[in-house]
Structures are given as C-alpha cells and as structure tokens.
Image (cartoon, rainbow, N blue to C red):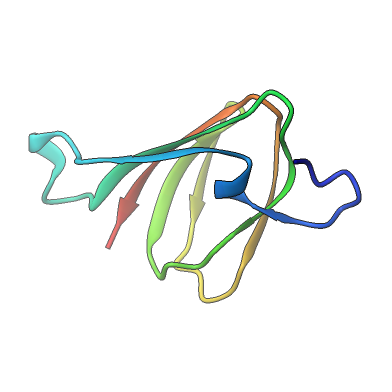
Length: 89
C-alpha cells in the first residue's frame, strides 16, 4: 500500500509499529521509545493520528520534534525506512 496518488495512508498501515519501555535511566523523562519500520513496497504520504504528546523522531537522517498534535499530521516517508522516536507525556 502506497500513497502514490497523494492520498495519505495511516503510518501504522504501511509498516510495523512497536513500542518499548525507555531505558531505566530515562524513564522519568520518556513515556516510551518506539519504531515504525516501513515495508519495502510502502511509503509516501503518511497520516499520523494525534495523541497529544511530543515526540523526538529520527526520520531519514533528520531529527524532528513533533507535537503536541491535536489534528492529523502528514509526513512523507521513504519506502523501507525505519522511523525511531521517543515520546514525552
């Protein structure tokens, strides 16, 4: 599933999303650490559902601070890439 026609798809629908507990030394700062690995045949315009939290993410070599969002955020993701993030409450 790709968004070749510029119609956004949910980011969870094009990859494997996982959440992990933060390392013990960081658990007072972060709610979780997460990753979303996109399938090699998936990517394009992605819709991220708002959760009211702030995330620091590593996307295609760029560090991005996102949130807190109250509306859907759109992001263009590279097929096969992995997005890694930390979530604050």
